[in-house]
Image (cartoon, rainbow, N blue to C red; front, side, top):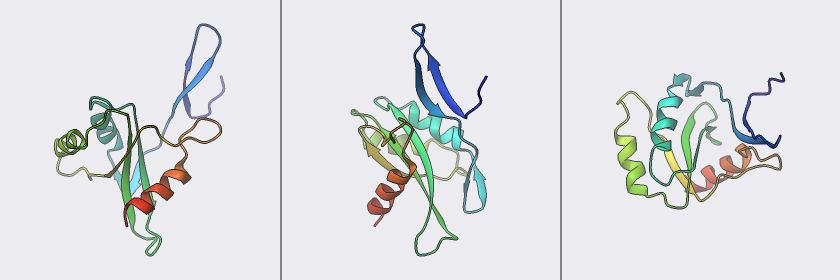
Length: 125
């Protein structure tokens, strides 16, 4: 067994497909947040194919961080995302949502965190 932190699907044909990366707990501005609740809430929305949560330090004040959710899917409706986030408990931080057809991925097919940081910074201005 080789432990990489990747969650994969092994097909009967012997093909291994990357599904997602096992992620550690998210910390936002010095506080651990319940990322699982946020991610599972967003994944239940009709049309959502993938979700990636991201914490990004502010360039002008690196001690402060912003929280983003990249929600991928071709049929995702903003109003449904907003309604789902309202259902989260009051103490759970609400991310800024960035919608896209597919998540940016690197050459290995893994979510491209650097590209998502660029998109988040452009979109929050």
